[in-house]
Amino acid sequence: MARYEHLPIYKAALDAAVHFENVVVGFSRYHKYTLGTELRNASRLVVEQVIRANSARERLPELIRLRGTCWNGCWC
Image 1 (cartoon, rainbow, N blue to C red):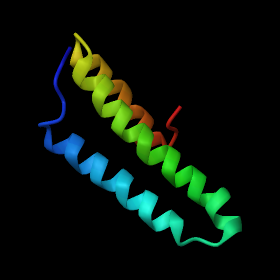
Image 2 (cartoon, rainbow, N blue to C red):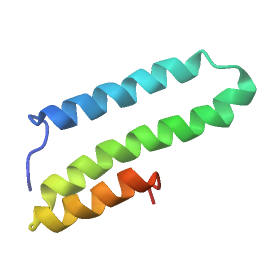
Image 3 (tube, rainbow, N blue to C red):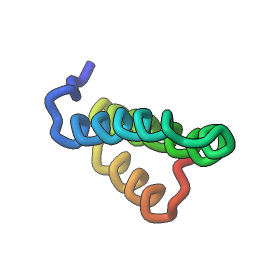
């Protein structure tokens, strides 16, 4: 299993996810469950994508795929 905790991009993605969690707590109820949910899910997905790319045997194709999803704005 590939280690990813030491990667600067993993640390930055995790910090961003924690930051969004803390920010969303202060949102109004409506925004907490609409915009807040989207922000929290997207930030967690970034962390998952870093882990997936680092764990892939062939990283280049995975990174190219991730770059495409990031630039298109679609995290699916």
